[in-house]
Image (cartoon, rainbow, N blue to C red; front, side, top):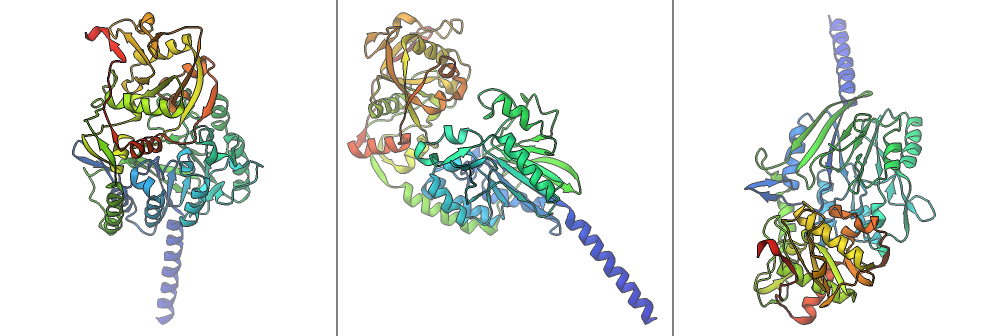
Length: 506
């Protein structure tokens, strides 16, 4: 009897071991895209969206069975984009990613916004690797704190990170002067082969790219074609919220989710199969904040409130911007910031997309927090030379684009347009004046503008299409320029708004 009982115990033990081993082979992968520094939730229509406390609750909900391995991928542009991220140089974001046990952070262009040295320090603080297969030193050697890929917890799956040329284009030269961005398809092909030799069966490629064409893709058509033709890649994770324009999506599985922590993607890897791919909303409509990290969040919030309460100067007037998305007119704030930037760059003209700034200044003390509220994202500015014909084309584009946040705020020029006229013929060409003098179509003018629109953002392809060449990349970002302006003068005031006139509304 004892021998039978002993044999039964051995059989049961073996069964448990085999069962647990099989269960442990199964892997859950969770991916979040472009957190943009939003460690606290964003409130919209009385619903709180994203934020680490809600993200933690959702991840715990998806991971109820602790016997299943889980890897969490931070897919690009995580450590920069909010005042709490900026004022802690990204450390608050990394701390919370450590608490949630992230497996990796794919390097996007915003990761370099604090500078190369600061990113290296953040990599030391992180309890997970930073990954990008195609960001290297200028001599093509690997960067010590950036790995090309990570093998996941099942030992049979891996994530290869890729970055795009936007890392160079969207950053100040001083922050990326020591690095190079190699062809992403070549890098993925190289490391896929290396991983296959190590016995990895499932390869996931994650990064800040889109598989469609156009200025928003971050990849050239050739790069996208070759990347999505790679045989060894099983899944592509992108940061694009909507891939309806993706002409290559039918060839390879492509998955994306909402940015700023509003959504996450979850899927399972079992053997050589990727399955149960689902997208989940992360908001207070269906989740309660995770109390375990509430104290950490409270400490960060108290520190930020203390820092942002610093008074920089005084606003002698209310200086508003447009309400909501209705940027179809010049605004007092748009004009003020445009004037500040034109003075800083010393050019004749300045252009800024209206969506670059938000809210407005209220009359009274102006704090550092107010400055972050009106400009939550940093911005680079560049200078170029443009002739009168090119300037007319850009103004016409501003008055014809459907996206209202594209409407240009200007300094140094004035003009009249008719919003009821046919797009392409709205600007009254004879009305355009530069510093009070009629525009000379053949003359070359000095122009400064946000790097975002110069690179084609908000559909401003004119600068590329017309061959407008880059002259200067200014090495101070817009928020710092505004801050120094207020500190130097002690006050800011609303100027005259008579630069842009829509005759259809007279």
